[in-house]
Image (cartoon, rainbow, N blue to C red; front, top):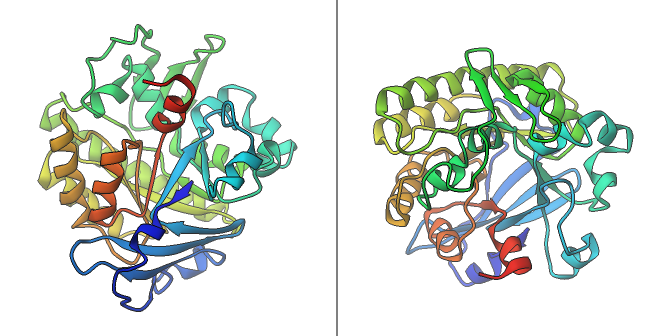
Length: 329
């Protein structure tokens, strides 16, 4: 990741707020989040996110090493450019080479030779984005589903989890909240997230509400599995859903605030235009606890990052910047 904190060095110092002053300190003994500065004219803030593999200065952009490798660039190049954290995708790695192989080789740190702070997603985003024919573009308001020409791979979704067909070999896989945590344990990233359903912006409010509450139940199961297998080496983020509906965003934010997650991620549909996306991010952020690190999932446009920073978002991830670096636009 690349830290934007230097842009905020001149803001007034407001002291340090520790995110470890919660009832769940014992669940995250090797992690902390300190807010070091806050801006007097916006909600922007700087901080330090401490993990077992090093510190991350926030705000920070998390580069996506999707399949445990940054294409066209080495870990040394990343470090030379000041990158502090990167992300790998649970969905892709569970299909190939498989979490067992990565665990056997020493986890993502040794597998990638990165040996620094890392984040993994739960696999849910890819299941639903690829399963519905690139919902990821709908979430960001870019184009209609199916325009990428992908075959739909999602077979079913129910209270237990999701069933989907692998794009690698056509085999059918089941992913539950417990299985997602188990896989992320084997991958070994510092920061991991709960399994959730990521819905497109064009579903109705009834389904969005149902999906959001099911994601809450999945989050509790993820948290329970996380605690059952606690090692002190990882920290768990909860994800706020709710689509474009303010009351559902408030409900989801309150749910995540009230449970023992280390950090908060803002996810789900962010509308069909950039303006709507900015409005939803700003609205949701106002209802999020300030003593936890806040991550914005899957957003990497330059304007979107700086808008998020002004709203108090601490970290971002997206494939967009590195993809542009390889292919141009």
